Length: 429
Picture 1 (cartoon, rainbow, N blue to C red):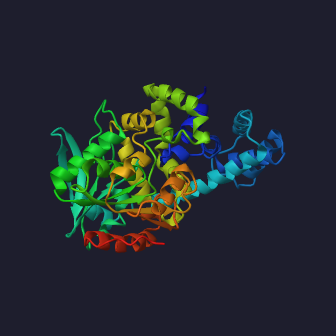
Picture 2 (picture 1 turned 120 degrees about the vertical axis):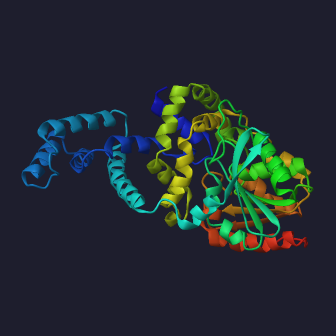
Picture 3 (picture 1 turned 180 degrees about the vertical axis):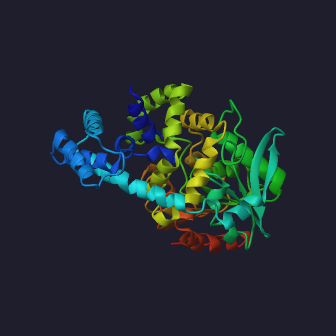
């Protein structure tokens, strides 16, 4: 299996931000997007039926008219580009796909330039980072967290590939009425990424429980997104009401990876592929190549735009929040360990053990964990059978707390007020 074919499997394999990259489109962009404008015209002409020679002659003609960039597009270069185009065509993309890829490359280059012009970290996020502290978990692992505000405690738990910075729009609002803790889970953000560490859902839940015991020291409301929600569920089931007062689950994941939903026929069909990918992820050089390819700012921006409804929210700061920690030593090991590890406890086994109030918030256009998929259907049916569970579906994608933060706050703040005050939470009809 070629690296590109493996990457296509890996892209489908996980429900994380990296997982939903369109690998073929990325490959074509890599072949076409880095060429000169003249080179992209050559490819487009070929896609429209023009010959390589016609395209090359047009490139020469443009140069003669003074329209070409200085020093570009000699006949030799045009022939080389035409040969490269033929190599791309040999990979069986349609002419429409080639033309679309060329146009997408131009669009993404423009988006990348705009992204580079934006400030990296806003003063608001920098103020959060400036208040970060370090907690020694088990006396050996350095865990980064922040504590802001006063009032009943809330702990924010990020999802796969993210960090506490992903709560940048929520911390200032929530901290007006609560003591807000946001933590970088081990392997992410500014927390330690230890070599050889075994990452599991149970380990993250253990870290969260210990954080509540050692740092917060009071019954707490947990708020998580995606894998962070599942981590919160496990901690609530294990710690009980003495540790966890309630949970806000934002687009909750069903497991650490897609193996968790093997009863979905689409996933079950690919289990042999998952096993093969697990084997390949153990090959450090191969896995490293894929990881390095997908952790670039431009690829991360493309993925985020595919899962955010509000494209304006996909700014340079968000891309930096996701991409910077991916360059840390140990980040590759965390990536491989999570993708190839066990999925962890299933939500349907955890919920009967939880007696505290739960608010489910779901973005209606989530493509990672669709509201009408196996996991989404399970959670959205819960309020009918569990009086402790309340559901709110809002406009947004996989991360509505950042994507549509104002709608998210409208859904969450009244619930938090009732639970924090110890009043009965009325289930919506």
